[in-house]
Amino acid sequence: MPCTVIAGGFWGDEGKGKIISYLALKEKLDLCIRTGSVNAAHTIWHKGKRYALHMVPGGFVHEKCRLLIAAGANVHVAQFLKEVKETNVKNRIRVDNQASIIEEKHSTQDKTSAHLKGLGTTGWGVGPAIEERVCRTAKLAKDIPELKPYLTDVSMETNRAIDEHRKVLLEGTQGVMLSLFHGTYPYVTSRDTSASAICSEAGVGPTKIDGVIVVLKSFITRVGTGPLPGEIPKEEALKRGWFETAAGTGRDRRSAPFNSELAKKAIMINGATQVALTKLDCVYPECKGVKDYQELSKEAKQFISNIEKQTRTPIVLIGTGPEALDIIDRRK
Ligand code: IMP
Ligand code: MG
Image (cartoon, rainbow, N blue to C red; front, side, top):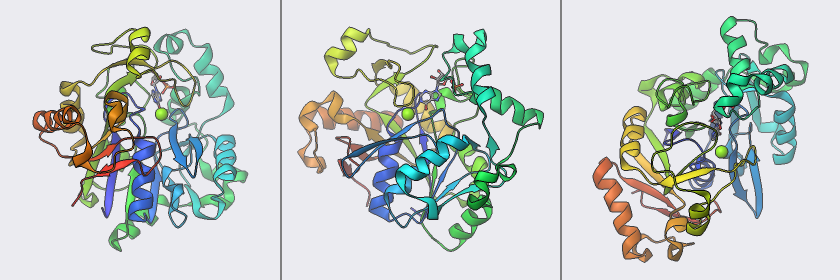
């Protein structure tokens, strides 16, 4: 555990929030560092309440976990303050001095650009905000009075914690198929979403990482435009119980069956050491709420061992329901 990266393997919405919240509670995480921006929503069920977090790290469910927003992240100030209040984490959340700021004008630019609209962006304005960062005209967290009480040096805090062998989790957003470099360009988001980029945003070098968990869902979904191999019609998705709407934007998610070739690519690019497989109960309803591997149905076990065989990577966490603790944990 000491320093683990969590990355999405498909087009986001694999259930990273659930896996992060489970690890936070189970491992009593010391530090959880969020990367990316406000376009990504991590859904977390905690004490019967549902959170769709765009800014606050998923580790908030463990009350002693310190929460950091990385230098490479892009902060929406109003959303950040709203979520800090909602999750009551004011005393333990900090933002890197150099995180960039996303403003209302970026959202307007996103929504009025015919090109970006054609890609089916979330409309939050992350692309235009990153464009400004690249042009070196962006505002940074240290320029914003409301963020003054929250400022810190995230890479310094994180590397110190790693050196002290504390439990650190680097929380990725979206999935590798949405990566600006490795995804289905141009139908991608405005950053690299792979494990290496997650480390880079946090300011942690590759030699400091102990493991990378890639989160894969038992079926695949994608929102927005762009290719989706094996896509099934919405009626079929409804019939199979796979139909979802986006946690962030409420849009319909398109869906397709699990794809081993995509899983292999995701594992390769992320250098994954382990896999977390979510929503097994959506494909095998008889597995809902199961916490012991032996109690899974024969078909579900077959599905899991096939993926392990093809990807040569162990599936160590298996999600069987929405709550953080609805999980089969096969780690030693
Ligand atoms: P943008 O990131 O808002 O520019 O949108 C670019 C593409 O990435 C669109 O297809 C979005 O639907 C997709 N996208 C961005 N963030 C997420 C996410 O958190 N989950 C799923 N898709 C996302
Ligand atoms: Mg999401």
